[in-house]
Amino acid sequence: MLNFKLLQKRANELGKNIEDLNIIFTSTCGELNHIGHIDLYYTARSLGDYLVVGLINDPTIDRPETKN
Picture 1 (cartoon, rainbow, N blue to C red):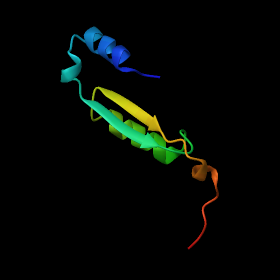
Picture 2: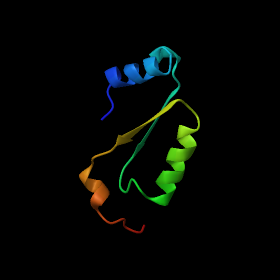
Picture 3: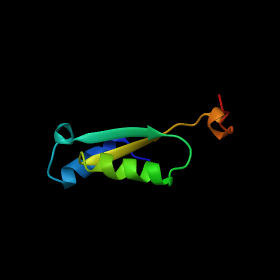
Picture 4: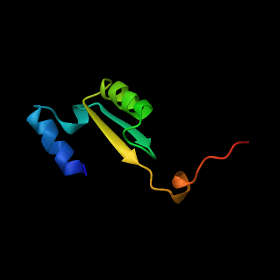
C-alpha cells in the first residue's frame, strides 16, 4: 500500500517536492493481470512520475456478465 508519507519520501529521493510530481491515478476491478489492464498500466505510467492503481472491491464484479 502506498500512502502519502511514502510518496513524499520517494519524491525527496528524486530531489523533488511532492507538489512537483505528476501522479497518475487509475482504478480497476477484476483481473489485475488482464492484458488490457496491463496495457493501460504501461500507458498511464508513461504519462507521469508515479502510477497509483486503485482497486475496486465490489461483490457484483465476481458475477458473470449477462447478455442484454
